[in-house]
Amino acid sequence: MIEMSVVGIRMDPPQNDPVLLLRESSGSRYLPIWIGQGEAAAIALRLQGVEPRRPLTHDLIVDLIKGMGRDLTEVRITDLQDGTFYADLVLDGDVTVSARPSDSVAVAVRFEVPIYAEDQVLAEAGLVLPDEDESGGDEPESAPDDEVEKFKEFLDTISADDFKAPDEP
Image 1 (cartoon, helix red, strand yellow):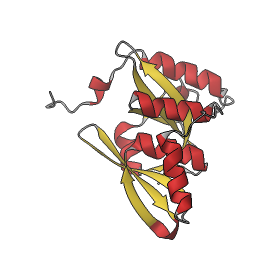
Image 2: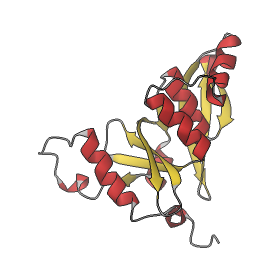
Image 3: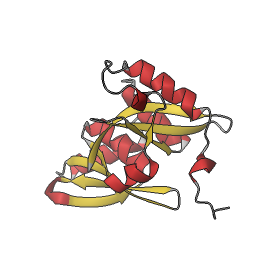
Image 4: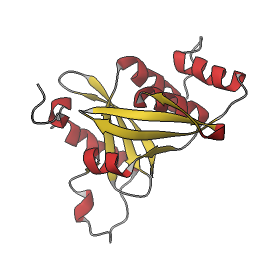
């Protein structure tokens, strides 16, 4: 398992599909996951510190978990099959609940728990920014804003269709 951090949400032109962008905490790979508008808004609002007047669905999930006397310990992105990512919410007592990665991350940012991705998921879908692997490690790391800008430029050249298997329609 590799720990990931949430970089943010990006809109993928021309369809304006939201992309959840995760980055390897101690590496240079990024994991883009196309998600729905509602989940993108829920993640972005939380990352920006915006408190909605009424609880969102993910806030309700947090309240339910806490109300049952449980705690979320981590989120795991476990698999990628036919272009679809899979994830688990891991509760105390090592209880796992299968969930979409977008919902899992929306809940994780509310609980402020680690997000992990399986090695094979990163091997299959992880991306390294074009300039990042050429530096040789001698230069200081780019500022996070620079990394996000590079990734935004990269996303302008790809779409969700680029991640379909060759025999998929």
